Image 1 (cartoon, one colour):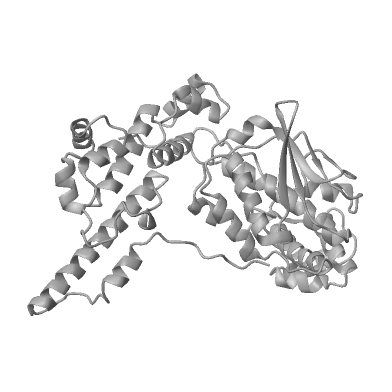
Image 2: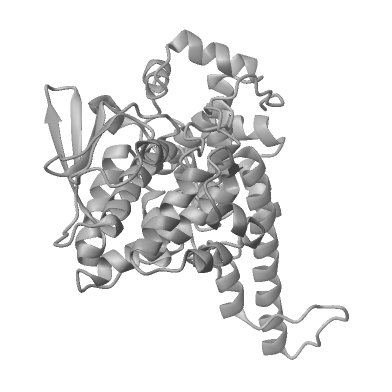
Length: 440
């Protein structure tokens, strides 16, 4: 077992606590220039208390909190993006569309996979989402172009494209848990906002008047692995497109990031990385990787063992999988080696452990692709997952026993809780899926 994790270093960049009011006023002025009502935007964002500050006279020294700005920015951009779509004669991208895109990306393996899947999604939804084009410059720099179809180029389309460009970069960084340094960001518009406002919304070197929207970054980042999970995504989904100060590099301990990668590779049947390859994923040396893990009270060997144990317990819960197959999927040479390791982890043999928590033969099988479950990504999540799975298994067993009693004419024992049948149990055993929310 791993020791208690001690976080010795915050890997995220510090985030400013406030934003100059002038930036927010520029966004509201853009809405007003196209016939929108800034006061309605402020009310919709839940910022009535700031109405005078945001719509009053020039008070350059004032500021608003980062959270307040993020809400206001989101409402302004959804309004402006809808206007930009209407002037092109097409339906706008909705918050539900954006949420769905992000949920589809969280299961990708690498950043290159993320970009490819995002472009395929863009192809499906048509011009509502920009197509992405990748090209290599000088062997080590990537140019990513965001090709948005625009006939009308005004402040609505300008801010829509600028926000989209910044949101893609922010999302990519967040998914791999690293700040991706940009050589440049390019916009195919002339400047339309105060340079201070643009620098806040697009906080890296940028140029106007380019042939296409896009940015350039080191090609090595294409091979970085996605280290986030759905629970983390749910926590930032409403702000990731609109919070320029959102910490991009992961604030989770390095040990949890390593566990995520190894767990995903094991579940996919991919051979585990060497320490050197794993360290390269985080742009650090092997010695630094081991030193940081030691500072968190764990080691590469301990994390690999925990990933194998989590997967083993997940697979053993399905009575249809032979123990030899569980051993193979968890990376052991034979069932004997697996049994010895499992007994060391739990104090019980795989067969005895399976008898205590195994799933009913009538329940959905992990061998059936339609019922494959997402692996827990963190030790705490794994514990909660196992508890839920055990509860589901008990419910399934109880349902089978009740149906057998009904068939044989036995009476229901006192105190038994009502269950509506196998269909309800199977539904409860399916992995939860977050429904797209509504923002804006």
